[in-house]
Length: 108
Image (cartoon, rainbow, N blue to C red):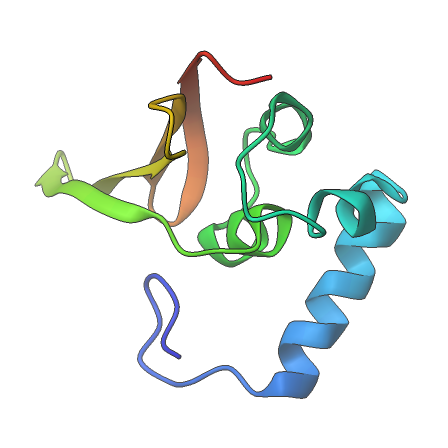
């Protein structure tokens, strides 16, 4: 699997190390949020400005759908969405690989 803004594949040990760091940073909420592939308000609240795409995938348990990608003033802006079957969703904007902003509709 190739992650955002990376030319090399991340190893399983790198991913597990990152997950451990996230768990240390955000507590047991990460473990609990991964039990379901449904995007929840709890997951949304854990996602903070400055974390990277790989960390968001670790929190949500799945890849986002890329909505747009563009360069402006030397920055790369990428927007991803995570949608649930019932239509609730969140959108996260990344600037140079780090969360810049986020929004959600109907998450519980």
